[in-house]
Amino acid sequence: MTTAETTTETPREASALEKVTVRYTINGEQREVEIAPNRTLLEVVRDELRLTGAKEGCGTGDCGACSMIVDGKLITSCLMLAPQADGSEITTIEGVAQDGKLHPLQQQFIDHGAVQCGFCIPGMILAGKALLDSNPAPSELEIREAIAGNLCRCTGYTKIVEAIAAAAD
Amino acid sequence: MRVRIRVRYNAPHMRRFDYFAPTSVEEAVSLLQERGDGARLLAGGTDLLVQMKEAGVHPSAVVSLHAVDELRGISDESDGGLRIGARTLMNDVAAHETVRGAYTALAEGAGVLGSTQTRNMATIGGNIANAAPSADTAPPLAVFDAEAEIAGPGGTRTLPVIELFSGPGSTTLETAEVITAFRLPAVPDHTGSAYQRHTPRKTMDIATVGVSVKLTLADDGSIGDAAICLGAVAPTVIRAGEAERALAGETPSDELFASAGELAQAAASPISDVRGSAEFRRYLIGVMTRRCLGIALERAQA
Image (tube, rainbow over all chains, first blue to last red; front, top):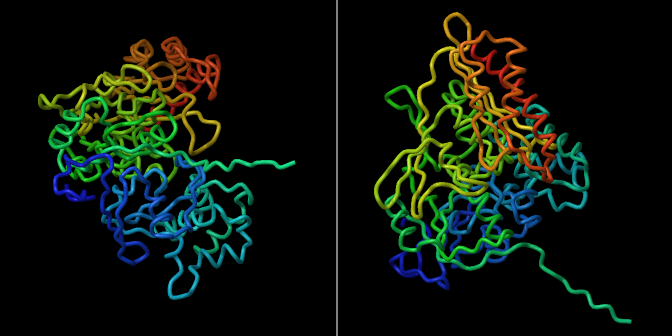
């Protein structure tokens, strides 16, 4: 057992009430926290690390409001057990702006009026970032497919798609 | 009048369990054996965590496979086939060059499942072990006659993927058995394959009907070998054997493909549910089988 060390040395003797220690590099910062293993990454990031940008919408991986980038991959953190991400590099919306300067995606979301209530936006921006990191010049279809796992109930998506396209330019 | 509003935290929650992260298959098998029926294997989590939150699945132990490196990755076999580790992510299956080229239907099945996020978490082994009749990688694996490598307390064994399924959500796996990989036989020249599914929404949906087809052409352009597998129209994915036999040895034509579609319809026993009526599903099988045969033919001729 290399990851998610239990507080005892032998994993097989772990009891249900035992906590595990997990270590993340989250937005470039090393964090360590002791948690019960039935907590999701989303719960730990919000409730223990107090980074509340990621939201819980459905809790079942359908809405994408809890999206984070874990080891370079966009995932829904409500469906990842916190100990599964032990040792990972995690980016949340709080880590997207650098040196007090908004990421181009964030700026374009503002400029295009792509934000209404805002609940889905952290996930939308991370989905856009994951897309642009691997595909710097996506087509409109590729943008729509990249955010297909992120539901927005306000905007109708058009301005979000435009904002991501503009950030790619 | 005072109105009392009860605020309910809406998010589903998981009960407590013992958590294990073994680093080898052997260790995983022995943990499953020790913990018995209360233990569940966790691969990508996109099915299991939803079941634990919403469907009353409350394992006493969760054995996560994320640290078992030997389960991950795709490699060429010495006989020209392909071996896909059970813990390989859907997006990695869908993007793999050999899968896209030689096993196109599988790339299509893996690439259409869920969303980007789902495909970055869900694994091919999990998709099969979860045994949904609508699983998008099951019909493609079946048309390629893929075999599952299974590790258990008594050693390892292999089983054709289609024989793993025994009903919706149930498999023929014994307690403490783990699917470790899928072996896909080499694909002959002049072979084409396709997977298509019907869903009301283009992405992030579950198949109303899924159809996968593989055609291998003889030198004279006739059909040497045909495989058709249907998803979401019976308690398990099923092969349309009569339709396959009706195609073998024949010259491809629209009429031939239409009659194969009718034979495929006869093989199914669809139910009516929220995703479509039995009648609609049966109709779709005909259309989609015909369509998939046309696409597979074009690819086989290319």
